Length: 62
Image 1: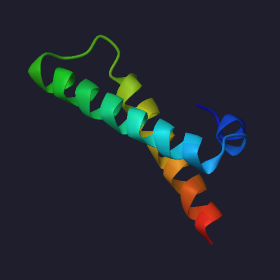
Image 2: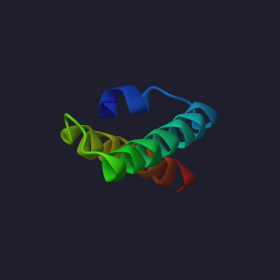
Image 3: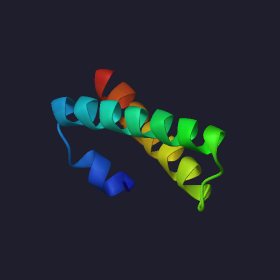
């Protein structure tokens, strides 16, 4: 998810997306621990998506 997409979402949508992204990241990380992923760069992308959404939520709280 790009920063421009994140800015267009409401706070409720951001919280929902954050939950989905965190769940997806933890599932992918567990799968990678068990057997290596074909594309481990997916982990980096999801981690950054979680960070983007969390940062936007923090900005809006202020």
